[in-house]
Every structure is written in C-alpha cells, then in structure tokens.
Length: 330
View 1 (spheres, rainbow, N blue to C red):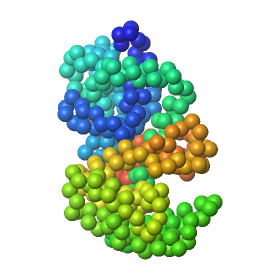
View 2: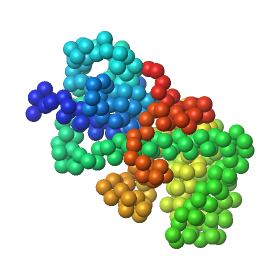
View 3: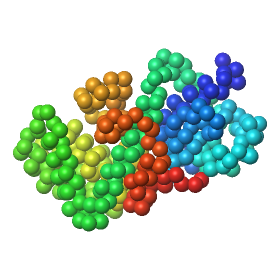
View 4: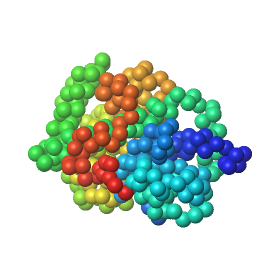
C-alpha cells in the first residue's frame, strides 16, 4: 500500500514509534547525526505533532516539538509558516523531501518509507495501550540520568573526583542494602566501599582525561568486565549506572559525553528486575534505559505523566550539567 493512500495520522503513529528507539542514530539533511532520546508526547490537537521530544546532539540534549509530513511541501500546503505554534520547531520529519525547506526547523529528517510501513505492520500486532508508557519511560530515563549527574556534579565540586566517587558509592550501597529483601554479603559491600576507587571501573574517573573519545566505549566495556572484589556483573553494572556513569558525564569533554550517552541509550541490560516485572508486566527490560525509566517512574510514586522540558529544568540542570539544553531555542 503506497503511503499516500494511508491517512497521515496513521503514518504519524508509525513514525513516532520508529523514532522511539533511543539506541538508533539518524543523519539529518544537514549532515548532523542525532539520537532521538524520546520522541515526545503525541499531540491530538492543533499544533506540532509531537510535544517535548528530546534529541541528543554533540553531547547535549535539546527539547522541543516535532512536526511530521508525508512530503516536505505539505509544510507550505498547511500554512505552517504563518502559524506561531511552529515558530520554534525542533525537528521536521518527512518521508519525501520534494522541496527544500530545511530552514523551518533546527533539523530536517527524512525517514525511509519501507521502515515506516514495516513499523506500521508491527504496531498492528502490538497493543496500542503501551505507547504512552514508552513515551513516559523514555522521559523518566532521561530525567534519572540528569538527576544523578546533578548529584555527582555537586560531589565533584565539593570533594574532588576520587572522594566524590567514594561518597557516591557509599550512598548507593546504603540505599541498596535497605531495599534488598535478601541482603548482599556484608563483606563484599564493605570491600566495595573502599576498593572501587582503585578498581578498573573506578579508575576511569581519574584517568578519563587520558582516554580519547573514539576508544572510550571499548575502555568502558573492558573495565566493567573486570571484578572489583569478587562481586557479580549485575552488581557491577548497577555500580556503573548509579555512581560511575553520572560522575563521568559531569567530567567528560563534549566528544566523550556523546559516547557515554550513546552507551546509556543502547546498552543491553544484564538481567530483569523482579520488582519491575511485577509493576510493569507489559514492558520490556532489554535495555538499560528501559529499566532506569521504570525505576524513576517508581521513584515518582507511580505518577503517570510525561516529563516535559519544564519539569526537567526544575532541577536547575542547565546551570550544573553543561550537556543539557532543556527547551533551548533552535
């Protein structure tokens, strides 16, 4: 079935689902390579199609609205240029670029027709009720990392890198011990508190400036594979996500930060969490960001709302973590 015979609202849902894989990279017409961290909330009213989408570019997160058209010329047909609601558009997504209108948004992205139609066929086999959950979890996953980075940045400024890592690890271990129904071996926990800073994974914090961005991913993976004090990979992954990664993000160069954030949105999880399986039985736990989004959702006491630009800015992240451009003008 040709796209022109399919209602645009139907194609819009398919494009939204296609963009909702934060582990995928996209090349815009300008040549910029981006990741759509969260495709935003679908807008069923007048105005841009997707609200509060989050786009990762050059290590910074930009939040704004997205408009979809089958053909780029539909922008003119729909008279969007004279509509103030489209004046600060983050991205224009089209299936066919029949005219050059790249100046209407910060980015113009041409999506492959075959990919859109395949996604549409896949969606017909998946319950539609899960779409809102995916949107919310992507935003919560972003919020969780940024919130942790703010805490890490505070520790870094006050204590320096080495002691900041030790303080973050101690706080994380204390919280984990209280929540676990089956406490971990106390000897392992006590050893972790002091051994992390001199371990391969903790050592990344002190030698980050010596690691070029193009090999950082390999160095990170190699460090995570090496035990600190006999603990399993699952504990080491949690240590990386909750303590080491936020601190690395605050210390990294722009090029290094791109790699770290790409890891966050593409890394596969080590194992499923039982509590998440019980609370979110319909959600997958294949990737780190999915688990982190669900954990942050639980932290917010089950509040079922999409985290928009204003909520994220409430943390003051733009003042403390320079990779955030929340709500920035295109």
